[in-house]
Image (cartoon, rainbow, N blue to C red; front, side, top):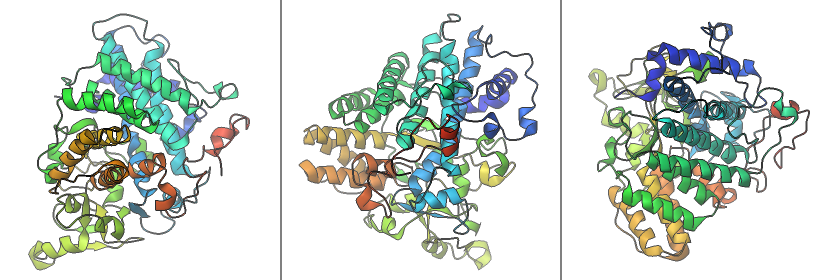
Length: 508
């Protein structure tokens, strides 16, 4: 089966429509040149494609849908920086000025001029606009798979908007229409409570119109829609609704925990039985620093790798996103997850001291070196290394795993007063990790679930938002200011382009 993102390189017509969208769509309050990679990238032959009269066949809709999927690959910043913002990892890198935007977020001193945050804003709105492009013209024609195409587009819109709401709070909401440059003079930020209503509608539609198993790897499924809907309910404190939809998914979906945790994040075990929603990457098309969002590879993986690494299994990277000693120590010695989630470089070197005829493993210590690396998303040997190898790693991102679903369901049931079912779901995750079952109730069980989420999902970009939504961030994250850091600042240029009509998030 083809991965859906790979089709971007195999279909000329697909490439043409993606180019058309890159040229024709102006993302909300974002200058077009910011999205463009270079003059050569912008100066393309559109083959007479017109975005206003494009949708005339099912193939047109399918090609545009692939363009909407494509922006998922740009969410690598969301994952990596979401982890760095938490108490799990430090920024790392080469020095205190290496990617300043990341360093500022790590220290909780980020401002509205932070370029990393602007990238997240821009790329997620690019995804929204691509999904809305399809939905704006959804009534052009009818075809047999139309409900599936629209369901996938609505899921993608919900996914991108959920990321925007998590990071920035109230943002402009556009439904079934693109936002063109110039709209910023009339468009206001929509309260996130209203945005959540739309996301729920989108995901309910997606769940009702998609199968649990797709014929093409990488396409969105009913299970992905149910899982994201459950997460959005949980973020709003709608615990009963979250418990219901997540339990339905657990009981009816085709998912289970991978029995051998050590294989879970390997490149030859992608899209496995635990993968509810997985973002596809490939090393078949190279990219470079000049256009990170142009890469079909997982850019964050290159950032996570040990600097100047020479040894077996792994490849070099830029030594960002380094787990702390505290995070490593939280694992029980018997926890099977610890050395799969976190690479202890000293221990690894000792175990491989005979490597390369006894010369052993070598690496360079970067800034804020802790001796630990995010092993889940680290460069593996055997990649094609086309272009810049640090930006074309093929490691897929497991955006929603079944373990996450079980722990969300455990939390929802616990907060909704059903500790029996909550314990059942929690203990499934613990037993897979080689730990004994526990028997708790009430707030003690709540704390155990939060602790288990941190251990199970470390390195996957969830911890910061888990801390914020549960009110624990100020006590756990150094420098976190209550009433300010729950949200990140709206990029300053976006406010300026509205004529300074928008108010900034509190504290910035």
